[in-house]
Image (cartoon, rainbow, N blue to C red):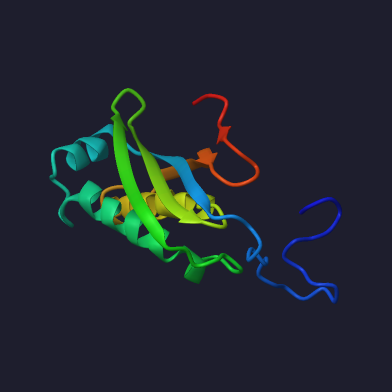
Length: 162
């Protein structure tokens, strides 16, 4: 929303995609994070590649990257973007019995890639859940959020605790 005007609604109240045709092309970057919490034995099975469905983190990485590329098909009114980089990384946290997921997406474009990064992190987490749900149904996915963004008129943003 700019001022009091809704950006995704036209004068008659109908949904619309924001017109970015007048915006400058800039390098856009976004990083998003999320956390998957599970029992210690499930985390150990993931880290030791002992999950029956296969390599959990490899599958989650590919799923996250694919999700970033499909964001405009999943999120209404999201612009399709020519992504130049998408990566998903994992940091195991044995003390918390968790895996921290971070997705980074980049493009040269007229609109940001925050939704692509958050979609990548979310789908990577969902893939981890899918691959271990036979071992533990109450795995918790939490803290999906934007960690950093740069490019465009609004400039650079970094989450306070980053």
